[in-house]
Image 1 (tube, helix red, strand yellow):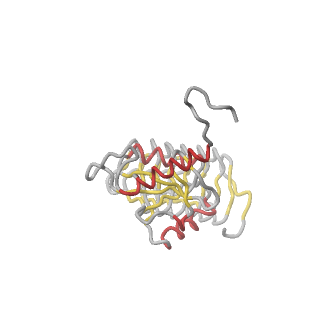
Image 2: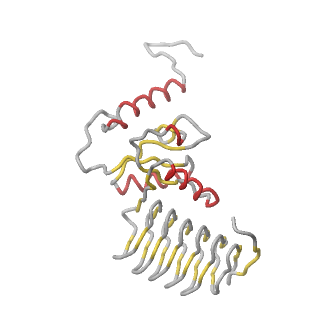
Image 3: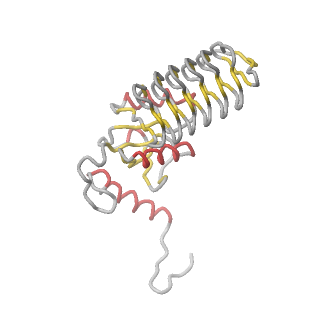
Length: 250
C-alpha cells in the first residue's frame, strides 16, 4: 500500500462499503434520507427493496426513481453482499422489517415465481412500478409485483397479471391478457384480444396478431410474427412463427 501524503490516509474498499452500509442503517431505515433530511409527508409512499443485482435491476431502479412514489433503500440477493447502486445488499432473512415491499428485479422467468412466493411468505408485499412515460388507458389492470417500463402502451381492456414484465416500448392493444409471470421484451406488439400465457416469454421485437393465443411456459424467439395459436410448453420462432420444440411445464 502506498504511504499517506498531504493528510490523506489510505482506506480499503471494504471500509468504505461498511461505512456506507452504516449510513443506510442510521438514516434510510429510520425515516430520514441519507443526507439526514426529514422526509416530506406523503412524498415517499413506501420503502422498497429490489430482489436482484443485475442489469434488469438497474432498469427497475430507474423506473422507480422516475415514478417518484417509492424509495429503493436496499437490494436482496442471497448469494451476494456489499453494495449495489450505493444501496446495501441483504439476504431476504436479514432484510429490515420496515421495508414492507419487494419488487422482483430479475428477468429469469424460471425463478421469478419462486422469489415472489418467498417474499409473500416473509410477510411482505410485492411492489409494482410503472414508468411515468408509459401510456396506460383508463380501466387497465396491472397485477401486484408487475413492472411496466418506459414507453410501454397498454390500451383499454388490457389485463396484466401478477409479477409480469412489460418491457421498454412494448405495446399491448385492446382487451389483451398477459397472464401471471409472463414477460414481454422491448418493442413486442400484441394485437387486440391476444393472450400470452403464464410464465411465457415473448422475445424482443416480436408481434402477436389479433386474437392469437400463446400458451403457458412458452418462449417466442426475437423478431417472430405469431399468426396462429401456440400450445403450452412450446418454443417458437420465425416469420411466421413455427413451433420448433415442445416440452414439459417448467
